[in-house]
Length: 186
View 1 (tube, rainbow, N blue to C red):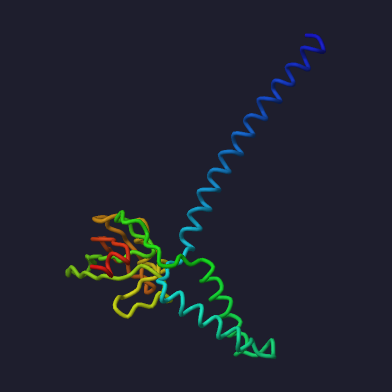
View 2: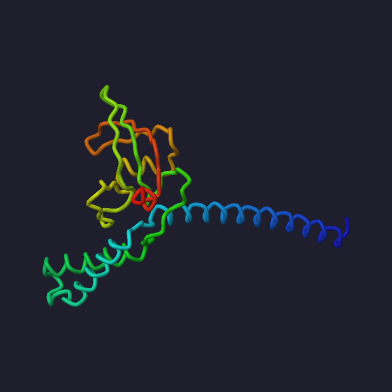
């Protein structure tokens, strides 16, 4: 083999390695994008227009009051912490938009579930959303709670298991999942 053939063979092997590397990077990018989309979905907070307005008013009042003079003042620290919490919550908020009426449990849906532990079949209906969504006419279950996170993505008839903070395991079956706006209209 002469020098030209050697160089050509080397270029071919280098090209093959580059193609393999490119394919690996594309696979990783696709996986990363899917993980990022899932993380964004779970961080999204569903709010009614009323709850959104209440939170905006609270944030405006806190900003107008100012954080306090002393950096190590506990009240000033709580004040700044609440401002950051509200800013984060409002930045992630989806306001008044009903999720799709596809029966899948996600924030903004009113869920009816059946608990199948302890011999009794108890049913409960609640809004899967944040406490900030504050509805007096409906119980609220946070998507970050053990029950809420277990139900995310469930379809009617699916049974899910979750562990309560006391360590006890519960079984729950999703009966219905209806967008909040449809529940309210019904």
